[in-house]
Image (cartoon, rainbow over all chains, first blue to last red):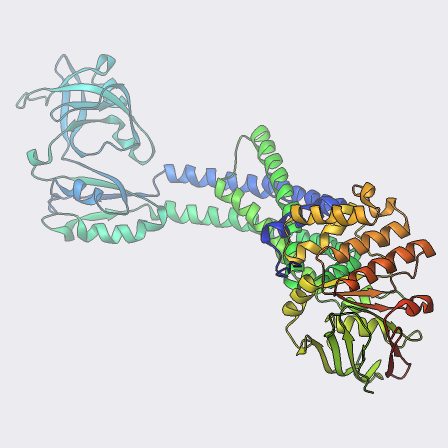
Amino acid sequence: MTRRWSGVPHVRELMRDAADSARAQKAVTGTLVAVLATVCFAILVTTGQAAASEAAVVAQIDTAGTRLIALSDNGGDAGILPDAPDTLAALGDVTWAFGLGEAVDVTNPALPEGRAAARALVGTLPDDLTLVRGRLPQPGEAIAGAGAAATLHLGAGLGTVQPPDGATPAVGVVGVFEATGPLAGLRNTVLIATDATDLDTLRFVYALATDVTTVDRLQATLATATPARDPAALTVEAPSGAIALRDVIAGRLGAASRQQMALIMGVTAVIIAVTMLSATAARRRDFGRRRALGATRSALVAGLLTQTSLGAVVGITLGTAAGLTTLALTTGELPTWRFTAGVAGLALLLTLAAAAPIATHAAHRDPLRILRVP
Amino acid sequence: MTGILLNPQAAAPVGTAVGARSLTFAYRAGLPPVITDLTVDVPVGATTALTGPSGSGKSTLLYLLALMIRPTGGEVVWDGVPASRMPDAARSRLRAAQVGFVFQDALLDPARSVLANVCDSGLFAGMRREEAADRARDLMARFGVDHREDHKPGEISGGQAQRVAICRALLTDPRVVFADEPTGNLDDESASIVWQALTDHAATGATVIVATHDRSLVALADHEVRLDRFGGATVRAVRP
């Protein structure tokens, strides 16, 4: 008995056919590859470089403390409770939090001519305080900022510190840290690791927001959520000026990049559309033949778009690889993977958007007019 | 005009695969119709020639019966069921599964190999590529073009190209084969091979409909539907 077919092509076979068409239509596929490779390369070495620079500038601004919120009890009236750093660190928008107690003068009992401020430290040692010598302190031990260590003549960062009046016992210094970014002011301070239970109150609490966009919200939250005897007496400071500067710079750089990219993409869309138009015009009879053989319009459109996508993907891959390599060799700055993936995705979408109406038009041509031989 | 083809002497199976009911077609509104009120049944297991002078609508009727285009009025029926108003996708699937096409100029894809061209019809019918290639090689061997399977269409003769087109049309073992001037560009020997292929396929119980102006071919057909310039037709059994 004669076998009857379903008339529904296998998707895998359609894909293979589209790949065959892409290989067979060398001029069209080559043009697509060249256009997309050029576009991705151009965007990456121009807009991509700008985006990398923007990211570097923003990162530089961020190191100046756009995410750091400081709570202070300047008059000593707010009474920040010692468990405040732990409470704040548990909030979702907070990366870390630590607290500092009231400052007291200390000297090195062995060489008492230098004086530095010492404060109790409660909570996690932040990233901006980098240990350069020794080790992290256990409760009851201290680490000295590099400036304070020099002032106190703490050779190799080790020794002891004690208030000048000798009323309290000396504390062992086990390390030296370098303070950078917004906490650079602590460079001249000795930090004494302290259990929260050993303190009555803190004078300062610092909290780092997970993202600069959450700073405003977090600032409002901390004003009320910080455990204190009188929260209304707390001073909450966020670097609004730095954030505004960051936004302005990021906005201006971003706007310039977007305009440049939109221009390149617009030109690309036109080139792709013209390429597809000439390609489908050259294949009019091929489409008519396929329609006669039973290809549905949607199968024709899908095949054309798949064929176009294959060429585009090759071009995008080549252009992206070339662009990233060029940037790495010339500037050393690479755009983020999100930017790179975004450019690739946008280029592919643009290709499909430019090709879709032309493919649809080609699939709707009257096969009779195409196939008839005068 | 109404004309029901009778086929009293035709070999079994007897029946109608494709027909037209009061079929009318005009290329555009306002233009005189190319086909007017045509009713015809095309018998199964036979070759039917669509003939007529140039411009009488032979190719148009062929494409109408093949559900490639929609009539302006009336219906094309397949197995007694109105088919010309079906959605385009359904008509395409019907063509893919049950129709073979032979065009006047072979109409092969010049960028692909001869084998790939033959396999083309299997793609839309729902064949796997490997299965289509196996069947294609069998057909190409039968028609003496198997040694050309890796060649491009531009590297073979016109007669070979039309034999390749026959292979493509028969790949899915279609119930109905439509051929539009299939021997128009061929020498006598190639034309004979093509015609023999079509009649052999009809002998398996398939319906073969050929638009042609070649009277020598008409003489070999089982039936003739002769179109006139005024949209009408006369029908007769050529070989009762």
